Each structure stands twice: as structure tokens, then as C-alpha cells.
Length: 116
Length: 110
Image (tube, rainbow over all chains, first blue to last red; front, side, top):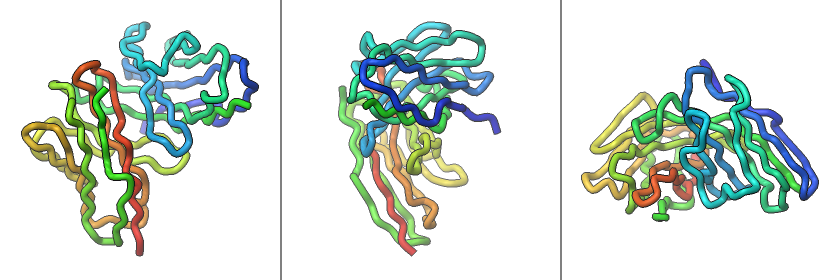
């Protein structure tokens, strides 16, 4: 069964450093998403991406965040200057179509980011 | 943003039916309601999705009343491996942004 993959599984960084989290969505999917989950809290939507541009973003997704699909397979989340409060599990997801049209999102295993 | 709330936790015994309700009082008109299961340190895993009335698949049923302001995930005959956190996911009626519910931690006892 096809699955979403994410690398690295864990990332430790110093405050102020840039990090790039990588995701390989399911190959025939067209919509891509990033979510964040702070330890012990619920999953929070960050951004959705379609046709090489952001389609929706939350208030969490400020200027420190950016997303990119640099080639036909990868989907990346960049945090330019990490803060302590960016420590969380980051999940990538993909779907064949938009969620509102009854398309299931498939989630990756997550990247645990720890900012020191 | 509208609140999407769930009970914090539920306990059950193996073989029992479990019903978990999510309140989403401002769901987007055209949005489906999706439920996910999450084990520790893993990504959410799709369980079931519906728009209204009742949907059933091989693992669960989903009940959605006519006003769509809530939904109930029903797990028949739970087992120990169903111990997890369960989330509903809906689109917000004002912003169309996707909102996960607050999550319900289900503990199944033998």
C-alpha cells in the first residue's frame, strides 16, 4: 500500500537555526498538507498546497514558515529561524483531491523537532 | 474559529461498543466529517468519513444528525488494540480551514 514518508524522523536544532522537514507524498496525490502537534496537544493545521501554491494557511503559519515542492516528489516545510515553541511533531499529509470533496488525507509518520 | 470539541477521555472494556461524539457547531456547508485514530508517536490514521446520516465500513460507523453540528464515531466490540486517541476533522464554516477536534483518549481494558 502506498504511504507518505517523512525525513528525518527526529531533528534537534539550536534556536535561531533553519530547519527543513521533508516529505514524499503518495505519488498520484495532488494536495499536500503540513500539520503540527505539540506534545500532549491536538493536531493543528498549518498549510495546504495545491498546484504549486499555498491554498490555505493557519495563523500559526507565519513568515518564518515556507513550503516548497522542489521536484516532482518532495514536499518540504522550512522554518527559517526556529524558536523554542516550534518544538513539536510535524506531520505531512497528502490527498488525491481536496478534503472537502470527500478525499481522504493520508498522514506520514511525522518528524519530531526539538529546538534547544 | 469555531470550536470542535470532544470528550477528553473514555474508558471501555474489550468487546463493548464505544461511541465518541464530536461537536462542530460551525462546520462548513459542503465539508465532510472525517475521523482519525492516532497511536503514540504516529501520524493520524483514517477511520471513516461521512457527510450526513449514517456511514458504515468494516471498522466503524459514523452517525451525523441532520443539522451536522455533531457527529458520533461508533466502534463496535473494541479490543485492546483500539486504545488510542481519536480525532474528528472538519472544515470551519467561516474560514474553510481544517480543524481537528480536541481528541478523545480511549483506553480499553481487558
